[in-house]
Length: 72
Image (cartoon, rainbow, N blue to C red; front, side):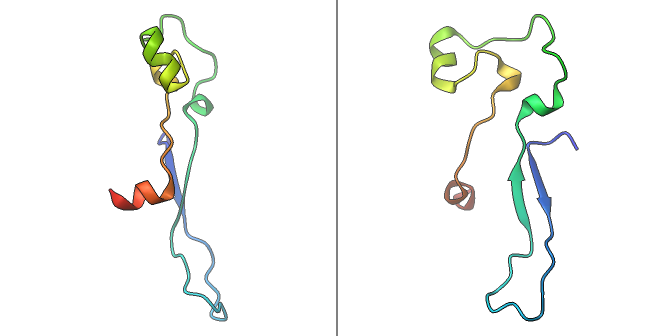
């Protein structure tokens, strides 16, 4: 399960007053899957690294709000 997005299916009670969300999604950061930082990782150019928030390409994880995800 080395993917940035995970899903789970919560318990749905027959007594819930609201319509249930059958599937919930959450994200995990890429550094969770990297024990130690290996040498010679690919890097962003300095200006792009400042914009993205990390110097190393494998550690970049863009954030999407739930509203942006719904549009795709």
